[in-house]
Amino acid sequence: MAVPGASLVPMLLGLGISLAAAHSPAGVECIVFNEEYMTCTWGSGQTLTANYSLYYWYENRSPVVECQQYLWEHGVRIGCRFEQSEIIQFKPFHVRVNASQDGRTLEIPSNCMELQNLVKPGAPVNLTIRNMSSNQLQLTWSSPYPNAHCLEHVVKYKSNKDTSWMKQEVKGDIFSFPSVDYEKYYTFYVRSKINNYCGSTQLWSEWSVPVFWGSNATSKGMAEEQLQWFWIHTVLIPIASCLLLLVLVVLLVRMERVWVIIMPRIPNPSKNFDDLFITHNGDFQEWVGVPKDVVESFKPNYSESICHVSELPYEPLQDNSTHLPGLPGPQEHGPYKNSYVGA
Image (cartoon, rainbow, N blue to C red; front, side, top):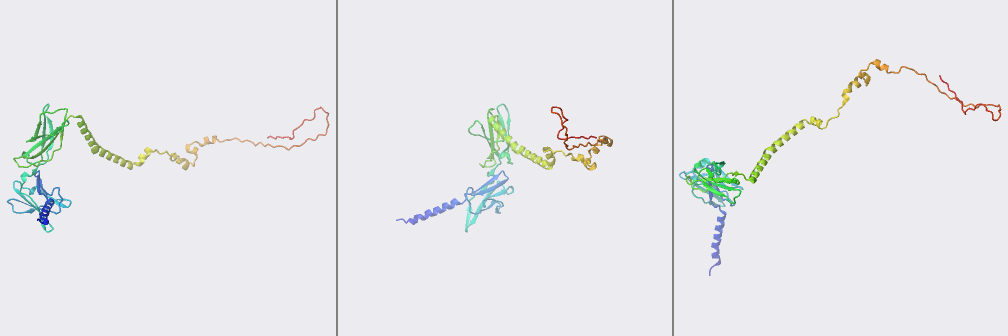
């Protein structure tokens, strides 16, 4: 009869080994970028729990050197950067990456490397299209990689009416497109890698910046619109903002003049009459300069006597004479007897 625990122990051991392998980095990956610098990274896409140290040496060179410039991510070492002076091609390159954790030595496996097979060139630049004939185009470019004769290239192109990209391998830095349609709008990309004469690598460069050719109205309209927005956002708006700021500063400095222009002041003529009130004491004729004899001629030079008017009190008439009826009597007077005296 089998013991249940006897079969459980190997399963647990196997599970522990698989878990340990799952948490350990897969290996070291080194890439030489355009022969300018090199990076060796480990634990790509994994969570590292320890800071590993990298040591390297070249074959037939005894000293073992530790990495001088580590690459960090989230506070943990994930790689090492080598400058151009530390890179020696055509010599086997050895790397050892290990760490110490909880009294145990952790090591990342690595193999001997040939650096000439790990070169990744830079993306091609200065793509240019020329019309060679009625239906032929010529695409040229240059590469930042110092040994251009060691490169091979791939051109990727597509028109606005195509659904998939076409790719063409090119040995040199010239690509001839034999037949084009002037009603289409074409897009071209180029990338490079080291050819088989200089190394055995599959590391391609990044795709270049695209170059366009054609007369598609929609695409050209979008390109022109993007160019216009570029000029508006990059040139016109900053210049207009600077001019507006300058105008505001000038207005602030000359605010009094601007305020006079916007809100004119009512003129005050009092300054013109200072002599009238101060020097001539308000004598308008003297201020105007009228001669005194003229002023005297307008003064009155005659006199008029005063006329007194008085009213005498009433005195009744006493007349005892009789008169016959029907005959006129003496003249009747009013109740008052007026008297006027004139001079």
